[in-house]
Image (cartoon, rainbow, N blue to C red):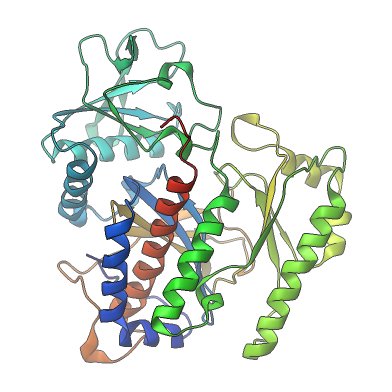
Length: 428
């Protein structure tokens, strides 16, 4: 169930896409076998980077906030996938409480919440929205574009169950990544399914754990279809004790930057790639593109000025950064209207349900695009086209290019499933 793109996409031909096209029966069989052993997260989104010689995930979000950017034509696919997920986690569910972020002034995010709610209602669930805002004491309607509105209601805790004043749901879906920590009101719940689980939030989750799981997935997958796993897997390392303000951990950071750059240089030499290797240093927990910097040589890490150290010191909710991921940078050779772009693939359960391009007109092919000034371009999909276009035998044909994107997106989703299994608290 992988929709395929039809757009004026430009970029290099990928030998990797040809291999995916030739191996699609083995790929689908391999993935089907993996899903018999692992349970995918309820939903996820994956940021991909396409360098032509390499196609890899660079971030996986377990609380995706851009469903409003998906093509409306694929709402039926979203509903079908959501039904599959609900039947898996809570087959008898009749009601669901959706808990969003506290971004009440972000209209784009609120449209995402409205889209999630609308999708879930189409599965036959009664859906209402409960807010973690401490000053929300009564139901509050928020106006949205096109005459829509969103009703936020205060949460009510009754013993070990959570609901609203007149609503006690079977299941709870978080669209809040818990960057600020796990609120007391969400802890110790019983007899209610909480999706995703609390340890999926950034209060406990670490990107390095995800990419360690992805490393295993990429190696196993690459062996199954006969490719070098590096072609789909960014090298990475991690520093656990960093304080940018006090310049603590600089030696660890410099050593790990050098080590990852060395790996990339060797691979570039092996494949005859004439690009400048770089790494991305990012907070090991958190999102919204905060706490991220591009580094092309070790000296840049040691010579950070005060402004750069301040930028790297905090992430969402003002939380201090003490752990960082050092990740191989993957050039993005995708462009839309002459601006650098990267695809973001959306999944519900194990199914690809759509995606969009993140575009930044002021960033280069070796820079982070998740930054102020970016915008989104929805992907346009062919209705009912869920398989590669074998007839063209052209790996760069849009259905085949985006089949490849769907494959790598699903590998990242599988890694998220393994990551959550490994990090499940013993009390669960």
